[in-house]
Amino acid sequence: RMYLRYAARRGWKVSFLDENTLLIAGHGAWDGLKNEAGVHRVQRVPSTERKGRIHTSTATVATLPEIKESEVTVNPNEIEIQFFHSSSQGGQNVQKVSTAVRLTHKPTGIAVSAQRERFQEQNRRIAMELLRAKLWERQEEEKMRTIAGYRSVIGRGMRAEKIRTYNFPQNRVTDHRIKKSWGNLEAIVDGDLSKIIGLTQNLS
Image (cartoon, rainbow, N blue to C red):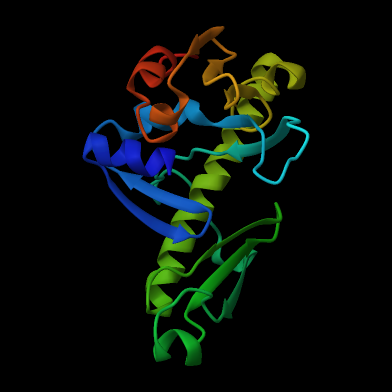
């Protein structure tokens, strides 16, 4: 919800590739969201918690740019293609025809899927775009390991770095990279991310 609402505020176009993957397009989208990658920690007291104990959960966010075919070459012979029924509500076409596509890059084991569209070929194209982006990310990680050594890469923000905590009992959001906190948590998770992203989008 937070990223959907923020994208709407910025006038960006948002579409679901699957239930956990968003495609966000618009001027400044990559520059604004690239540093949102990492581990986001949520602290709250669930409604079912009788003793008032704080429960902590985490969500890992990955951000990938759209990669052109000329930037990452994928050998078709190295891809395993599977077709399956979409889990979304799309009428008889979705129920009867295997329109969803899963691609597995055999050398790396990277797997992606797409089921947004009603036609198999459209989903195959979307899945290929996702695969190129993930292969690009893998290449970037390898470059960083070569330059800086593996231990330095872990904190780069692509996957493993804890970047932000959303503390509901204290109505506070903390960004650990810049060691700064904000109040009015509900507004932030409702898409009011401009101040935070303004301070973090230029982090290296």
